[in-house]
Image (tube, rainbow, N blue to C red; front, side):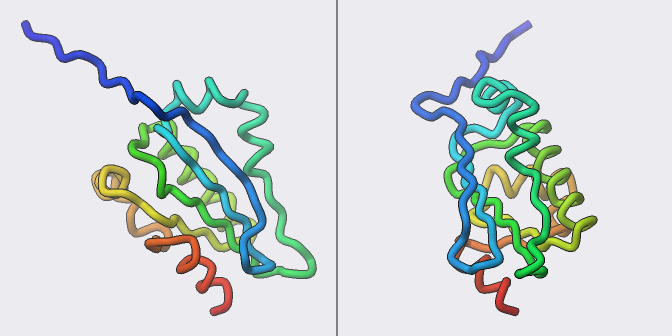
Length: 135
C-alpha cells in the first residue's frame, strides 16, 4: 500500500482582516493563507472568529454589502467552505448582500464540486464587488 505525504503550505499563514470598504455601506473581509480548520483555529479562537463575522445592517445604510476577498487564499477545506456558506446564509437572513471576490481556480473548483458556486455572486476584484453596492 502506498502513502502520499500530507501537503503542507509553506510560507503563508492564515489571516483575516475586517475593514470598511470604499463604498460607505460595504465591509471587506480579506483572507490570506490556507483557509482550513487547522489554520483558521490556530489563528483565532472559535469565539473570536464568530465575533469577527457578526454584522448588523446599519440604519444609515440599509443595503449593506459583505465582501469576502479570497484573492490570497490558495486552498479552502470543508470547514472554510462551511464558514463561507454559513456567513452567506446569515447575510441573506439579515438582508445583507454577499459577494466573493478574487476566487482562485482551486477555490472555484471546490465551489463547483460542492455545487455552491451558484449561490452567491463572484467577482474578480473587491472594486468590482463594491460596484454592486451602487446597483
